[in-house]
Image (cartoon, rainbow, N blue to C red; front, side, top):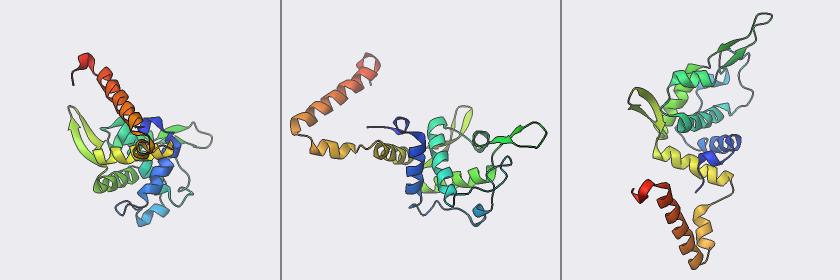
Length: 176
């Protein structure tokens, strides 16, 4: 089954944003139409559905980097500010937007807060992983459950056998 890493990032984010629009917990606040996404920007985003694109992008980033906090996400979504004749400087992205997006993703059950040793932040839940992996398989044009249904029984047995052999080959010494 394809994972999020197999799909094109931009296509995955756009399809995930379309799916996130259907979830009632994730919706832009009233002020989102007027807010810039960071100090380095001159204007608010031109797209009306930018909140969902940012939420999908944050979900993908948390999946890749987790555990991750608002500060690290602010750095990721920052950029260079044009200061006229002065040199450009890097400025972080908006923390309020990222915090609200993370809270909404948490309410929807896609991310959760955790502490792993000295690292603390948000990680993707199994629900969030399956959400992104399903979208990745759609983006790649595959639906694994339907492909097995259409195949004859002897091919299904061969596919399952190959899958089982691949799993045991990944594990050292054949131990789980």
